[in-house]
Length: 325
Image (cartoon, rainbow, N blue to C red; front, side):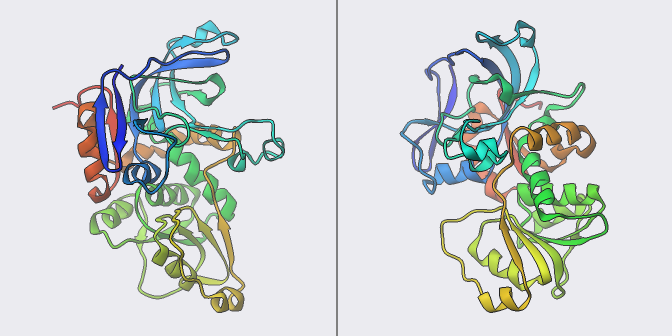
């Protein structure tokens, strides 16, 4: 079957002979409709995030239709349109037993340590294939997974209605944080050097951050090391800084500022299964996250999609059908 694969750092190709998905007990096979692209995918393509071997199937934010079920799965699930939750915790370790599945040491991740979902069919555990709300557009459904990240970050920050927050970085994740914060009744401000991304955030109801002023809650979504400095500088006394973006490059941090202002820094890694993903599915129709989509490419154009993703003022997605002309 066709699949988008990484053959060398920076080299993305479409192959026609990727192995067929095998449906084991408890699994379903999903015929993929579309896959969203995120920063971790770009890190894999750039070679900044190692994968087990090459060639490597890319992608993890998949949606599609169940076409086959394994032993122990209700046959009635065939035909369901689903969003794939691409992080599979073991559900047996102490972290999972405590509900902290995001930090499961045995977590399997599509596109990172398991072959990805940017292919015609993918097998996933049935409990990680979430039925789509009736009538939901593919544009919104394909954003469910990053929406789960944003909603989990807001919950971990303790953001409340009426509270001002600063979002550092208006990439796809920053845009979803702005959208979710606005829906909560909070007041999101945003910083981004890219004029197009900033304009997209303003369309979603955020405000451009003033050049000065401090915020009780700051979300750092870009992962760029200088952005951490900005987040600390703009946090108010007793402020909460939530780090969503990731980088292996060390960032400078003034402990004087952190201590003097009594700041709390909290890393926020994806979401916990099943509650956080269930919350995103339940709210996707209300929040309409597909509004952040800006670039749609067919599978045949996947190399171009990866090459241009950083310049688009929103999120890129790849469909397994030709886009309308």
